[in-house]
Length: 361
Image (cartoon, rainbow, N blue to C red):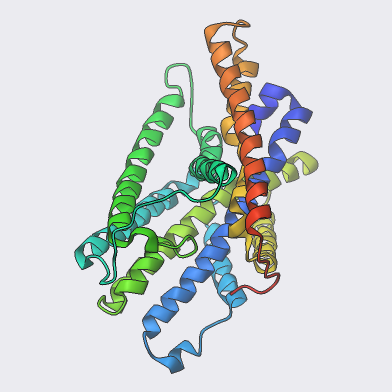
């Protein structure tokens, strides 16, 4: 926010960044509530195993959402700003590495399902269908970088001066992050495809395929541990994505009242945000299906704004190498965002949408 105001002026900076940042923050938290609540339900069912009486006592979808958001908001009360989330981020990284490692190692050790058949991917449909599928793939890759929307927020909290610029520790942090991501994703993708092939559904993912084929020959406590790690990871992610919205509300309070924000107001803001995101999650539990459309709207924060902000702040010579590079990347980002948004609309028109308003399952 501060960088945007410096780059584009107070009015335009707030207009360009405030809504997308809060939209991204709130949307990501809603996704975490939906996914976290569903994972809690799977954890409960895994612990019940085949006990029908135990399974009958499960909560409803809305109640699982409520359990997740209550834990998330209670946890957030102990963290006043992004600086305080360093350990939360560390725990989130460790849990992600742990549950990804569990899944791919167990998938390899358990072997392929008995009915596994080698398949060859064949592109079907006309040229238009293949083009849409290709752009959908690009969109999924682009949305994988949505976390970069918080990079500038995080870097803004680091101490910086002429001798020790914040870009150096930030660069180290990004390098370590990508190393962890590679350690999680590459083995998971390779082992998952080897073990299950096209049996991995889009809705359930590799974890759903693993529990479907290996639940009977795997300890329920081990499966429960994987679910528990995923839940902890979601809770950590919720804290990180929610913090920019908390900070914006606090900044608004300080600018209006011209005084420091008391602790009870911070707590009230977090409770309000938790209630609002919970209501949206219950009202629109099908939002993950709209993930590509929702994500495409916020993509300019990642692929467009940084380039134009750098030009506005650094003011390089017009048509110089760095000016052309940032202008070209920013323009390419605009074209990418528009294309991906159109692709998301196209996919919804072709595939349709099964909306279950106020009926989380």
